[in-house]
Amino acid sequence: MGGKVEVITSKSNINMYRMLTLKQALHLECLGMKRRGCSVLSIVKREYHLTGRKEKVYKAFCVLVEEAKQDQTATLGRVK
Image (tube, rainbow, N blue to C red; front, side, top):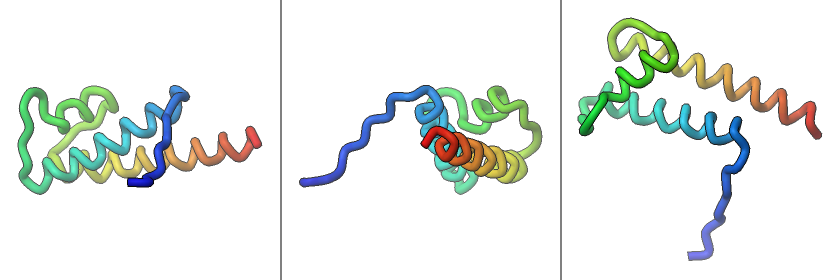
């Protein structure tokens, strides 16, 4: 039980964590898993202004996540 604990405090890290969580949840929805309330597909479409079916939205969202990761890495590189 000596696991590593990380605390996410900055707004950009919280947003990145949320994007990664939405990406994984959307992947599970594409595989057939259902959830209560709004679907992740509708959340991603609404918040990131994407259109289309699950697979198309998933691929486009993966590109957005990778771009956000690169932007965040570039920003961290400038800070140090």
